Length: 211
Image (cartoon, rainbow, N blue to C red; front, side, top):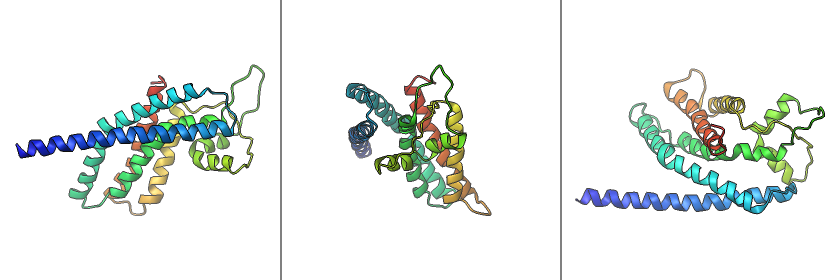
């Protein structure tokens, strides 16, 4: 009976935490995109931005609750008890990357331009994917009043962009957690980053009805 009561209290606490996460994430993301849209003088109405943010935040928190959080707990204990390694840092990185990846395709939208009937010269491929891979840096440059003038017809809501992004996360995982020779624990930490990233990116594509 005592165990049942404790479990019930734990579930209530987790539910309360998730509601708080949802509200905090919604306010943060909405304010972030509102600031960007003002900076680039976007004509997107506020109600549409609010609706879009609500849809993505709701799905992100739902996937976190049903899949990412249970997997993170399993991943942490599996590394601790079977590999005798503390994977808390890579788990936290993974959760952050999951939420970041949920909104990455829309962040890159500030560099997007509509395709036109007449032929226009698009950005070089390495510039296009620099937008995808280094979006936070480019947003920081934008708010520093440095004008890059980068615009592309690629909107990154596709599996090609997801594959490139996943490869980048794998490389980043090797830099942060890898080394030679690569142990099983290091390999696990390297692979978990693109896994979290892919889940987040696919969640975004699901909301946008691309999946």
